[in-house]
Length: 148
Image (tube, rainbow, N blue to C red):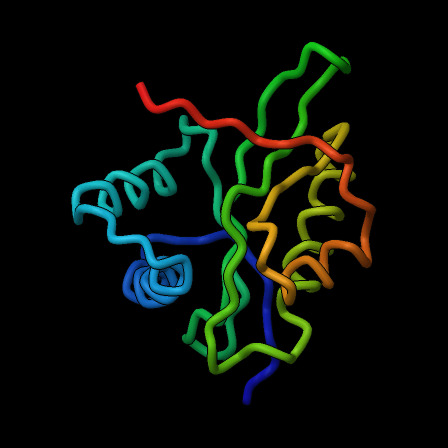
């Protein structure tokens, strides 16, 4: 396998991103309408949107992504970063790419002056939690989601 590069998602990455995105949805057993995925992609490509993507790439193949958004906070001056979606393609797991993508966001955040990076995962996702616990303990917050 070629050396892995971490970089911003570009328009040329759409097919590779969609492949890994579908693996991500399959893992969580989610069936999104095609227009939701199309809208997500459009937001990722819109420079005015708050949603951004970083990818791990070997050659021309997308191996994983970190989709994140920045926002102001009532608790600090400046911006926080929410890591909404992190996925490494099944064939590329176990190579440290999840850690590399998180480390990449940490470095990017320090460069851009973000205050905090945060994320959540399913309680039963033991593999992801082992990675996340190596960075920081859970802060004990419980998520509530109300559909409107």
